[in-house]
Length: 80
Image (cartoon, rainbow, N blue to C red; front, side, top):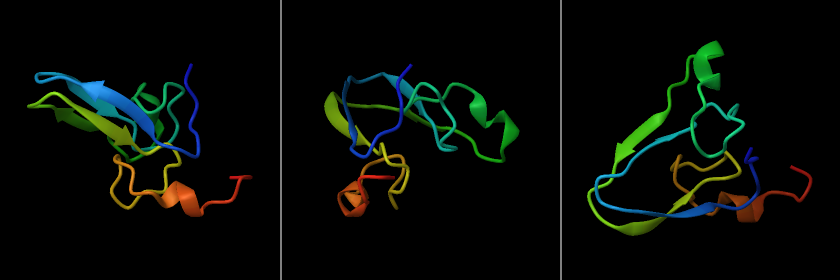
């Protein structure tokens, strides 16, 4: 079980990978969707990657570019 955190999740993806990222913040498998959104009106962000690359997924759930990190975590307090 992976928890949310005040730093991005760094991951390597390869061409053809399909990932479903949690957008509701309720997943016990952050940053991936585990179906917990069924009690909300939120849907996961599903993306198929077309190239090999490293991506940074928001761990604090405050990014304006969600699901991607925009650096917002750097402005949050340690207690969040």
